[in-house]
Image 1: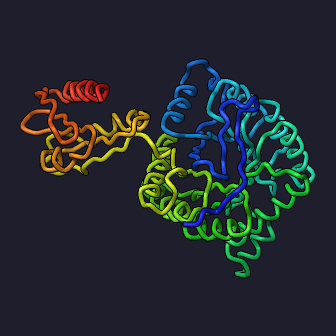
Image 2: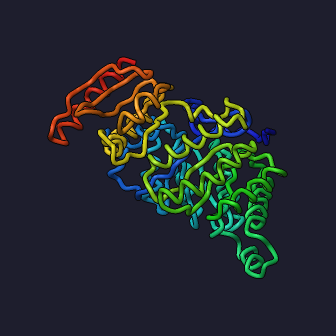
Image 3: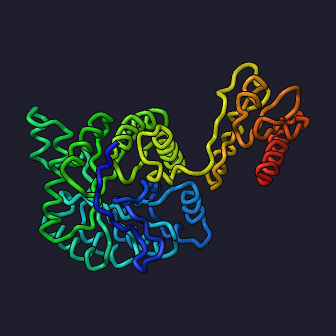
Length: 381
């Protein structure tokens, strides 16, 4: 596998602290995007916003992007950035003045589409201030925000959508080059996995800017994971891509978890250097699908534990099995596992049973007993 070597960009930490490298020899960085509007309530110390940001960081999120459609949201994001260790990114369309304002705060990166930020003159103003502040800029080109002339060529069949994405990105890079601005990341996204792959391949073959990859508007959880995997796995296996987002109509946490699993799959395939996939480290969960033999509710246990387990930084395998057919024998390679049989909850480590607990009749009590016993054994690993 030949790695497409890109320039390295340092994201965040204007004072040199908590900087995240993208490109070059740096590991692939996982991103997600905040799914709610920015409001003053987001700034509550120790509040829900801070708690979720901390959880996303623990899950492996290296960059967190926020939509910034107003001056008020720019102010809020600016103050939030000063409170967070995770680098925060401002995503701005249509109004270059918002981009100029948010650069007064310690945000870590801008994401703009220069084609809709107000024109070349306005884009150059943003770049000049970003250069002065040392803030990188991502050129984000999407299938739905192409320049009018390129959209016309697609409609008449003279240009394929993936080629239009590349052409639009290279046009914007020319503006950046004119301004002497090299601190740049590029993304080319469309809702088709195959066209996203084609666009990224074409861009990477003739440009050395770090590339953010994924499929935009990919759909709900199942469809979105499938479509993103179809693109991201191929590109990373070919050495293309420096940072990823699994775009889903679902939670931010699931976006990060899905990205981790994709990186893990590429790493374990042997098609790419393992050093690129540090974000895939941590807990690996294996679980059976559940059937009529079930003596333990794997679905409910996974629902309760998935986010908590992925936030553990230990490199262990956890098995959640529904009956003795699947565990512990089939999960003997797991560091720790849980299943049920004969009215008992069974916890095992490396294929050997370490605890058997009677299951209370009340479902809520049974769940609490299982959780307490599992946590006790987990902490003893």
